[in-house]
Amino acid sequence: MLSIKWATLSAGLIIAISLRVTEADPSSADDSGPVKAVWQPGQDALRCTQRFGSSQKVTIIMVADPGKFSGTPESSFYVGAVQNKNEVPANITSCSDLLTGNILNQPVVVATSGIGPVAAAMCTMEMLQCSSLIKDFVYVGTSGWTSQLGGVLNAPGSCGEANLPRDLARIGDIAVTPYAANWACKLADYSGQCKGAPNLCSYPEEIYGPQEARLYGDCVFSQSSKAMLNLADELISATRTPQFSANVASLATDFEQRIAPYETAYFAAMSNGTGHQYILPPWRAPRVWDYNVAAEIDAQFFYSGVPWDMVARNYTAQTLNLATGRSLTQYDVIAVSAMEAVGVAPAINLHNQISGKAEVPYVLVRANSDYLYQPVQRAKSGNGWETVENPPPANSSVAYRFAIGTSSSAVLTMLQLRCLQGAANNVTACAYTPLQF
Figure (cartoon, rainbow, N blue to C red):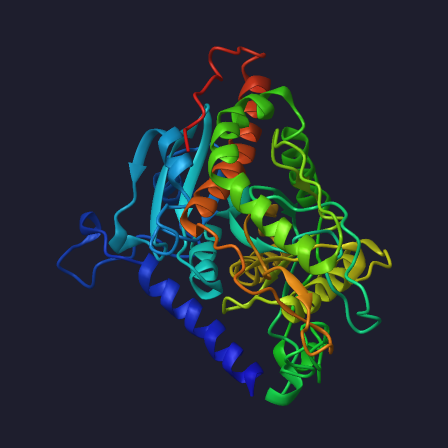
């Protein structure tokens, strides 16, 4: 049973973290017994002050990829901006990488969890042991996206025509949301999973959906508090300021030279396949999609394709409806596909529910690094839809780095605005040079 496996995994996470974060402190050794632990529940705030490098509340910025997958560490833009940097030794943290310091006069912890929900949960739980010193928590990185609001095809329903183009998602666009769902919580046998194949416009069969908690435990994370929504709104507002426009201006040339040719080819192939015209305006800045149309949909594999996207958008709509009381459908949302939120969200939500623990507001920030499906065309057999022949090849490493740049710019702009507020709008004290592509 998967529920038993998850319970075992949860227990394993707690044990593993306890082992990693209670490393020996040589200064506490004596001849009378074993070495004392560095970090135990109930120890005074001094330990956390030493770990975070600050007695002030810090902003946790956590990413997944240390660079092994995409070629660019997702923390690279933050690491380049950190002052008074202190790297935490690898043998005393369960995170892949951990450093402390200040960005624009704001105390921060920059953590790399490693890819996947287990790694993200372990690193997050380690940080939560010092929750009294955490101001807020931002999980940020890259993700695969639906190519347009509502997707290109939808089933169940009529697949006679592809959806009309509207609100196209661009590489580098940013989703800001406190909500997430686990795509794996559906349960389907092989034939059900592939129902309708090879026709792309077919909806995989579900035996249980993500709201069926008795099998998998919680799979939909729609909880939010005023503090969480305030954090999301603060970050969204930061992207609508002149500072953000200035901070991403340096990316415009790179977009036109490295990203736009792929996007143009992608949507041209989509146009040829669907018969619809896709118009791409000149890029000026990434669009920010808020929590009214986006939640992070996680899987532990790199799924892609139109059927996957339809399920992911359906789960996005369900999650947002539970969170906001709305009546959205898969036609009204985009899918933002990643891996780590279903490790981060339950860890922080459970922590926030413990009596006496300091609430840790969090937000998920994901930039579009690739599309969840290739361009489509009507099947030559006359039955349904298929992928176009010879789809345009994507330069994944370039797109990932660009997405890392746009999402990092959003978070750094929020910190810059906090700096300006704290420094009475001293522009010089809060200035930084945006990192180049």
